[in-house]
Length: 279
Image (cartoon, rainbow, N blue to C red; front, side, top):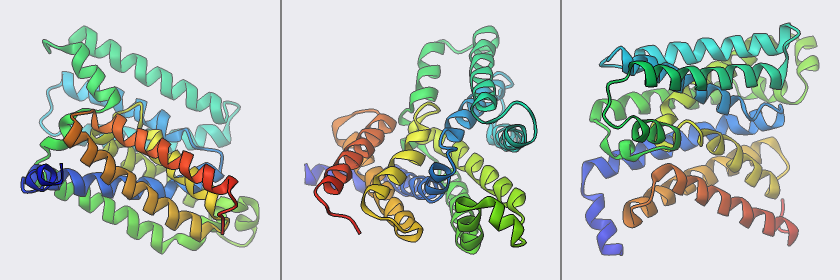
């Protein structure tokens, strides 16, 4: 098996998949801790459905670069979701449910009405649950994903203290002069970018797992925000790497395999917590 893995690693498409998969997992885990603590974990799920709807429109329009449509629509939806959830009578989970279910339904409807694909069911299933498209990435797509991931990481590092303040006590942060609304907006936009990039890795319906599971696993072992964030990032990257490796060797779906490894990691951390192995 090790010899087989070494042989596969000699192919560029496998290397590309490893790089992109680990970068996406790292970015998702960094903001995952903040989203879990703010009780906004399922924003990833809602935005992934919006991205699916945008993908359906881009597919029907036969756009060469679908990212030009998917990314702006998802970012705009993230902004509207944040504003709708905080400024009107439609709040929190209700706004998320409206956007999530509506986008998913319209996306599937558009594909059924206008798509000329001979295998519509297979295309939809691959988009929702992930496919082998992560193994067919071009060099340009890898560079784009790497640039977006580096931007997200730098943004998180530079704004770490402000994100920390907004996460734990938004009212106090506002009183202290921190523009909480602006940083919430930045968080929403960044997670929208991560969702769009991650669709090729785990599919629209499984993206929330990359955001939630590593953060919850790290919270079982550590108590400080910094330690949880670092541990979450390590767990997420390791799970993504193992998931891609197992998927290549066993021929299993990439997205589902990564999520299964994340679930196993959470179970292990829960056992360690019960055994008193915490810091």
